[in-house]
Length: 184
Ligand code: NI
Image (tube, rainbow, N blue to C red; front, side, top):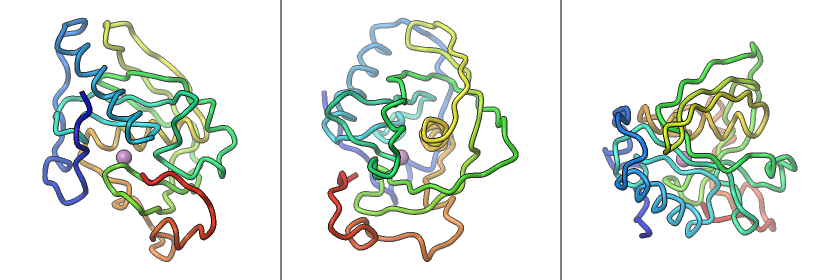
C-alpha cells in the first residue's frame, strides 16, 4: 500500500518517535513493505516512518535501479549508488569524525526544495532490521548523510532546521536550472 507522504507543517513530522519493541511480526513486515512501496513510488532514496504518520523509530534507505536520491541531486554524488538497501530500526548514531561536510539535501516531505546542510562526514550506526538482526556499520560521505537525514526524522527534525546558510536554500529548479532532478 502506498501512503501519502506528510509535508512540512504537519505536526506529526515534529514528534519524537517511539522505539519498536517487537520484531518479526506481521504488522512490522507489512509496514516495511508499505514503506518501500511508498518510497519507490515517490522515487526517493530514503523514508522514515514518521513521514507516513507512523511514530516508530524505523527508517529505510538505499535504492534500486529506478529510484533517485531523496537527499540530493544524485548527479552531484557519483557514490550515491553505494548506499545499500537497508531497514534500520531503533538506530543509534555515533560520529567518527570531527569534520562536517556540506552537501545538498532534499526531502520527500519538503517537495521542490533543496538546501545545503552540514553533516558529520563519517559515523557508525547500529540498530536492528525487521527480523531483529543486529546492524552495525560504518558509513562515510553520502551514505552517512542519508542515515543522518533519515534518523533526524525520528526526532522530529527536518533538514531545513539544519540549514546554516540560507542563501543556499531554495527551489530545486532555480538552484539547478536545466538539470533533471527528481521532484522530491
Ligand atoms: Ni526526509
